[in-house]
Image 1: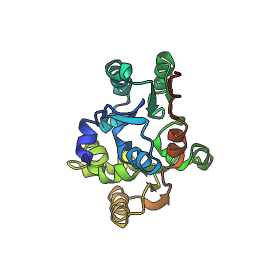
Image 2: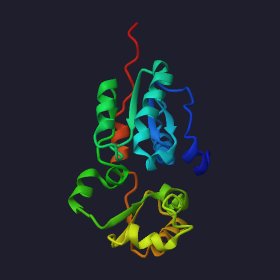
Image 3: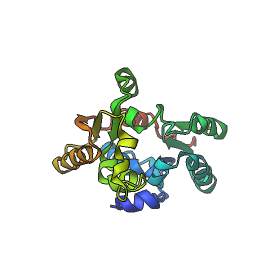
Image 4: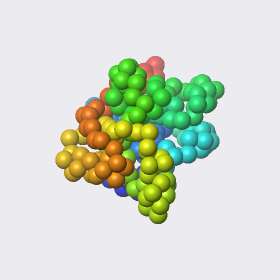
Length: 215
């Protein structure tokens, strides 16, 4: 299996098998591959853009357009496995322009928990981590914010947060312990919610195989 470091910096190339290409965030690779295997979705192929784009929303749309231009002709259709992800509606507009469907919701935290359930909580003082982001906490949070060099900045960044919510896609005691440590490092209360795959599973289930060509 490709490493988290590779998913973060390089993404995942398509295998060239399947009729529909999923273009996804690298932070979702393990979950998508698990769903594909569990449901025998052989019609789906997966191409992940580098997960580190999570920290640079302005780079998502150019990378998506490049991927569509490079791989689009090889597939019957493309489905974009990103939510809005900090693009301020521009990603949806780009998908509309290219005639592509995408996952609904503001970000992966919402669709893992369920978009409606997440919105109903209206938590403005919670900081969220998924399985991937727990594993990659230093690379995606601690180091980009400079906290490894200047830990005193912690309260400036996180002073208005009250708790860290770990949205667990899997039951993993080691990850839960690491998530608790992340909360302690940020000076936040800790809450674990087992979400499983949430609306991600529903969204991928809707991407059905195209009908066979007529004789």
